[in-house]
Figure 1 (tube, rainbow, N blue to C red):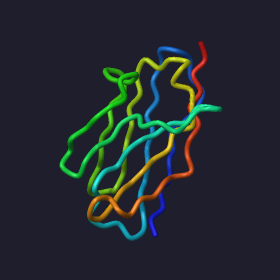
Figure 2: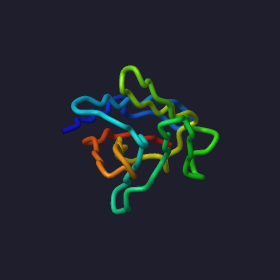
Figure 3: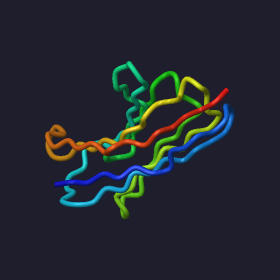
Length: 118
């Protein structure tokens, strides 16, 4: 079993920054990818950013140039630095981990709320 605990969400004004963290604990092995997703009210959960086991990253077009995903492998912690936040970034942000061959073992965190006021 793996537990993912997100932190760092909150209420900010447009143009400000937040840094989300996701601490992973439990039986962690052969991490394939770690990622951040977000879900706004009434919308589907979408990928925000992903980082592979060798450090390759990819981002949703809407956050490119503003968000940066990173990992502390020693601490099994995932980060998302969010700069120049916009009201449309308002959502619950979820941490995701895929482990094992082909990422067969997948876990989600409980989510952290990010609200950006205009």
